[in-house]
Length: 104
Image (cartoon, rainbow, N blue to C red):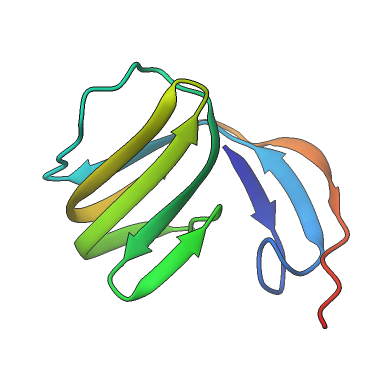
């Protein structure tokens, strides 16, 4: 996964981009059959009342209803469950500086 490190809001404010392997765990997951592994191109996570588009908060340790939607070349994977966590598995590899987005 790509990780954006920033002193401000990740994905919005300037910072640096890193690549890191991660494991997403959805407790009590219910999902349709899908071809795995899959390269994810975009996704969203509904965690309680918050909807995260193409970004996940780190650290992630959510308890409560959740729905994770991942889109890949082989189709969509939608997971629903009773909680979600994300574990970073290896050392991050630096990719680039992120200049941030211009706010209106």
